[in-house]
Image 1 (tube, rainbow, N blue to C red):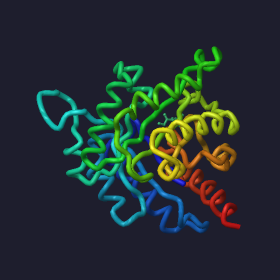
Image 2: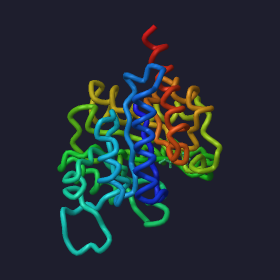
Image 3: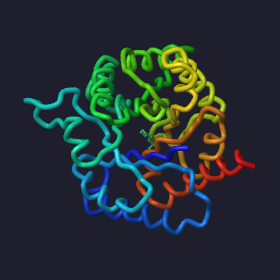
Length: 260
Ligand code: 13P
C-alpha cells in the first residue's frame, strides 16, 4: 500500500520543510501499525533538497511532479531526470491531468518522459483519468486504456517496483467529490488487465495502482479496501500532516485486516 502526496504548487520552502518534518514526526510517534505502508511525497522542485533532508530518517521517499524528456539542453525553465536523481529523487509524476490541461501534454509526451524516467532509474507515476463528459458518454474505459497504452508503449518494465499508475478521474480532482469505491475499482481492474497484457501477471499483479481525486481520511478506507486499489495519490489532503497520516492510518487498517 503506497500513500503518496502530490503537493502541486503549494507551500513555500520553509513551510514545505516544516510539513515534511511534521510527517516524519507523525510517523515516528504513530500509535497504529503503519509498518507496511509505504510513503512518498512529491513537493515542488525547489523544495526537493529541503524536503529530502527533513525526511532523511523517515520511511518516506521523495519524488518530483514532472520532468523533461531530454537529459539537458536549451529548455528554459525545465528540469531533467539526471538533475532529479542527483538530489536523491526516486520517482516522478508524469502526465498529471493538470499538465495535460495547462501545458497540452499528450500521451506521446508522457511516453517520452516515461522512457526517460526508466532510463535513469526513476519510477514513473503515470497519471490517467477521464473527464466527466467522457464518463457520461460511456468512454471512461477506452479513454483510460488509451492513456495507459500511450504512456507505456515500448517502456520496459521488468519488475513491479519500476512503475506506478495513478487513476485520477478529472471530475474528482480538487472537487471534494471522490469516485465511489466500486467505480474506482472498476477502472483499476481495466488498468490491471491492460498492464497484464503488456507486462505479464508476475509484474502487473504487483504494480501499485493508486487512486487520486479528493481522497480524504473519511473516504480513504472504502477506496483502499478495493482489491485493485493499492494506495492513493493525494492532493490537498497531503498538505497537512494530520490528514495525510489520517489516510495512512486507513491504509494500515486495510493491510492489518488483510493479514488477519
Ligand atoms: P486532490 O486530492 O486535491 O483532489 O488532488 C488529487 C490529485 O490531483 C493528486 O495528483
